Every structure is written in structure tokens, then in C-alpha cells.
Length: 514
Image (cartoon, rainbow, N blue to C red; front, top):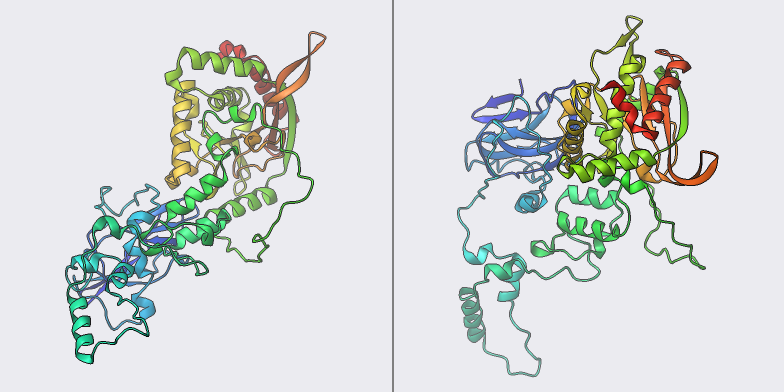
């Protein structure tokens, strides 16, 4: 059970999120104590070891208590939120329980970072927007204006020490008149609040905004807030991140079909200045970062892979000029299909796994068996803001190259937005990793447990290449294959890698087995 009730007070507990997940970290509350919620309304975003998930509440009423703040890790079944009858908020609860980021709810429309996931078993999939109602009834036009604007409009002007002072009765009459005829603040002016004075700490309501700024090294004190009352919003931080990254290749944007185009001709690094630039304001800070959520899941999987799998790596340099040519031909002939290099490489891997099924397998240590899979679920590594994820293209062996391209694009879009459901991150049988987008030539990648192999592709650059006895410039890349030595020997691994290399150099080889 995920709920309890006592005297019309409903306690909603963290539900089972599926896929064997036992805990989740609270990322952001969408409501605050005193808000009115409806059935199936999204109330909180949590992060599991698989993905970010938006959790709907199965009750309607007034939020009485939020049992944990942002950043707290809860186990399945622990209390999450308490809901009571409308307008019956628990005024006797301690302030720490009644006020979990109360101002965050005021700006949640600006600060939402929804993953697009719908929790299985909870909600109807069409939850209504965040409706809320504060205690105390409706607010007047003057009350709706930000506090700073009302204070500015009602503040009495300073009086010179030499000016004649009015009598006590006149002063009292003036104060009463000013307090009763305060000017109305138009809505257009309400949004344009004065920024915090220099030297004051920046005003940030959302813990999510602080986390994004910390992860990207953004100085909050240097930002110009656009939120009401001088609050720094998420868009302010994202604008600063985008400005700092102008002119720099973004690795996340290269995960889809255009992944390898960005690595064809990387720009040369700028020469170092004669004297090192000033580094004021960038002092190193010691900190401890909890190993939670996706980061912990990745750490556990990689640690298990290293401890259980006796892996070996083999690699080869290949001439990818023909691969680039066939990609350009497909783009010109059928631009609507959006076939990029990653889709073509996926097609080559599928063909190679059909010829060498040893690499499309896993080891069942409990039964001491090698399990050769009757399907190919092709995973591909994608770097996102949340860390490294491996979306899985299911039944890739049944897809055409165009279908592979479409599925790669769809999954990449979900990965970027944080909307990948947990099921899209499990069940892979082989992984394709394009680390060339990071500007490196080769690597010895770690196998994605419990799979048996992983193919890595380095950057494609101009290199001297011997063709028909003549040294000519060609587009060259390095392919590396890490494999589980329990499932096959070097002959099978080398045969697979050589087949992939031959197809990269001469894609027409694929036609022989279509």
C-alpha cells in the first residue's frame, strides 16, 4: 500500500516505481503546504537510478505536509505528502514541516523541469495543470503586486531637517491618506522588479536551479534575475550556460544521427597566451557529492562489470572516406529519412552480430551458462545533463537503416529532455559508443554489464593513408572492440571487428547479405 488515512488526512507514500527500483531522490516539489491539489495532479519530481519521474497524487484536497525536502532520498513506502480536506491546512505543525520551500510553489510554472514520464499504475496520463489556492481567499490588485513594489509605493518621502515640521494631527492624517489611496500597480510593471542590490546574496528559490548552476560552474551572484522580486530563475542559469558555451562543440548534440559529423574536422586549439589569465573568483572548493541516482547506478554497473567480466580490447584503424560518401549520397537522395553516420554504423553492427552471434550474448553465472540471445537490442551511449545513459533500440535486427535512424533520433531526444522511461534503458544485448565526439581517437571502453561486447568509434580526421602504393589524405578513424573473453576467443572478436572495418571502408559489402 502506498497510502494511509486518519481522520480524513491522507498520507501518500512513495510508490513502487518499477524496474526493481527501491528508492528515489526528491528533485523538485511542484506544490507547497496550503496548495489545493486534484486527483492525478503532478506534485513532485523524483530521480531514480534509471530516470527522472513525475509522481501524481491519488487524492484531492489541501496539502497539509511535505514529508521531505529537495535532495532527500526516500525508500519505497516512506511518507511523501499528506493531503487533507480543502482549506484545512495543519496550522499546528512545526514551521519546518509546514514550510518546505513555500516560495518555490509561487514560481513553479517558471521552474518546472518535467521529464515527460507518466508513473505506471498512478495517474491517468492526462494530469491537469498545477492548480493552487492560497488560504485567506482572493487577493486584491495591490496584494497581487510584489511586496517590493507595494513598499516602494507606500514609502513616505524623506523630509529635510530644515523644513517646517507638520503637527502631530497633520502627520497622522497624511499617513492615513497615503495608506488608503496607495496607487494600483499595473500587471505589466509587476514583472519588472528591481534587481537585488549589489553585494547582497542572490535570491534563488528552487534547489534545482542551484544544482544546475553548481554543476555548470555558473556564478549566481553574476546573473541578472528576471523573476518576480529579483528571483533567479532556471532560464537565467540556462542563458548563462548557453552564453558560456557559444562557439564550443557540444557533445550532447552529437549523440543523434549527426554524431560523427562533428568529429570529422575538429578545430585546432587556440594558442596559449603569453601570460596566464587572471583566475580571481574561481578558487577551488572542497565538497562531498553524494553518489546517488543515475550516478550511483552507473558506478555500480561499471564496478560489477570490471569485477565479473574478464574483458579484452582489440582495435583497428580504418579509412572512413567511403562511409562518409555513402552518408552524403543518402542525405542527398532522401533527406527526409535523416540517415546519419550513427544509423549506418548501427546497421553495420547488426549485420556483424548476425555473422558472429557469440558477441550478442551474456553469461548466466548462476547456471554457469552462456546465453546467446535470439534478438538484437542495440544500445548506444548518450551523454546528458544527468550523466551517461544507454538508450536501447529494441529488435534492431528487424529494422531498416531508415527505421534505425528514426528510432535513434527519438531516443536521443528523450535522453536530452530527461524523458526516457526506465524500460528504454534496460535489456540491451550490445552497445555502440561514439566517444569520438569528445575529440579522442581511441579508448578501452568498459562493457555494459551484463552484455558481452561494446564497439567504440573515435573521431574521424584527415590522416596520411597508403592507397595503391601512394600516400594520400583520407578520412581515418579508429574502431575498438572490448569483449568478454568468457563468451568467445580472439578469433571471433577479431573476425567481427574486421567485418565492421571492411564495411566502414567499403559499405557496398553490406549488399552481399541483404
